[in-house]
Image 1 (cartoon, rainbow, N blue to C red):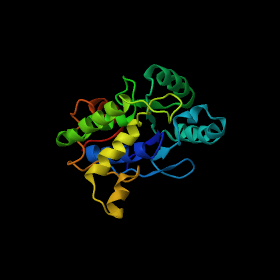
Image 2 (cartoon, one colour; image 1 turned 135 degrees about the horizontal axis):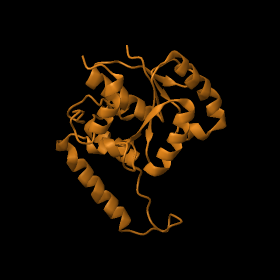
Image 3 (tube, one colour; image 1 turned 120 degrees about the vertical axis):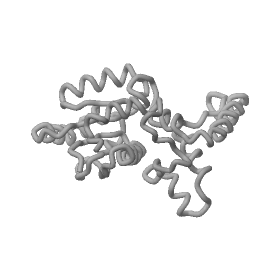
Image 4 (cartoon, rainbow, N blue to C red; image 1 turned 135 degrees about the vertical axis):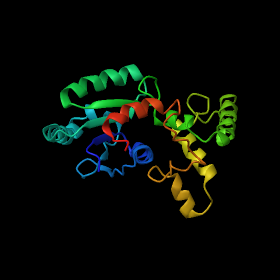
Length: 213
């Protein structure tokens, strides 16, 4: 069992990291929420460190981890990298953790940015079609929205659509679309090769915390 505590924004991050760490290091980590014993904890949103209510729960947890000498890691979306990097730099000094920002600890983006880059190449046509859909929407006007334009669906919706096109039509298959259920080990859907250009920064970040026996 690994001696590490990872904090993430939500369920998608938990499941992805759980599968990636199992794939790369053969280590099975549990997932849970604040106040429940687990190794990958969701803080339910990127604003956790700026929420006085959540910090009342988080500060004692981080303090106890420091006393126990357990490595503590925060993995969030970068969104705007410079902004979130500055924010986490400040909190990491106070709470004694190291951090990584999706997609690669350098660029603006989010976990969905990374997921789009590590799909099985045979499935690229799905995103080609999605791009045509986005272009079609942007090329039309509507009186149904305040802006007069259609809203382009978020990247999270794009990833949901990608997974949905690859699973079956039964209720049990549709369950695989939900945030906690995608199988990132599935080589027909995802490429978790640690040498993949988009995954190398995450692999290099995680390596010191895990044995590669």
